[in-house]
Image (tube, rainbow, N blue to C red; front, side, top):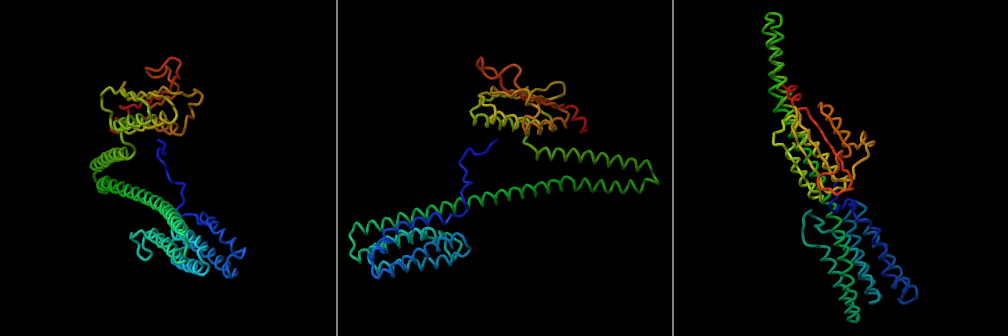
Length: 399
């Protein structure tokens, strides 16, 4: 069944793109314009300070997210803080527009975990952002700025820093979830491999040991007592057949969930897709040899109904006839042209090959008698999938 019913964050990068924060330097455009028009004295010192601020701004963000040297980024951030405070003290409150930019860098560079210990601690980005905002307010008050200007700088610093910090935290959380999901998938595969290896060892270890011992006895008796050697060979054959049956049963358990569980899963999946399910069984138990195979038939057929039919009702019939079991899946959807059936999708092709290998038959095409009961006149004919598996032949083959 197709995935993607919920929102997946697979398109988000593991690391933020530093370039997205560079355009925010335009916040200082008014300050740069004032410097060029001689508002600050000496102009060359103000220009040099602004150039240093811009360089440290870009460098701190880039080093933090494009290199493996976070401590270098912290040092650059500390230098940026010093330059910002120095410029504000030297040239007055008109330079306080740099504090929201400093707050942005703090939100992007300061880690949520401790820089020295890989553990969760205080919310460091928010603490640093509020510290920067309070510093801007304190400098503005000391420089005699109006209450409105102080509030504007403080609020701008808090808002800018918090938005960046929370957004970067969101991206980091998504990356962590993605890594966790991949690790869980690898662990599940490893556990399944271990279980499969353990089951095969438990299943075949003793049996193969017995066969080896009997083969050695048969070899020694071949010249002295042919009758006993033949008996040992017959025992080896019997043990081998029994082992083959056990392996088939074990592999059947790995391949599928069985017909009964697939029917229950089909009922739930169809209901979730808004398709009414009508399931009928004649009550008899399906032999184990055919159970997993018919479970795959139900899974493939129901998946095709949900993905391709566009119908509103699906009937599933399980019937025993003349030493065989037949599963028929019919929907009231759009159906398919008869000439497309030989290639009708990789799923049906694979299912057809598997059914043929087991001596069964598969028929797929437009429903010959129309859609399931209850469909309106003139509605599409629907699609029908019928699979028959010869049970008796399979049971005798495994005897």
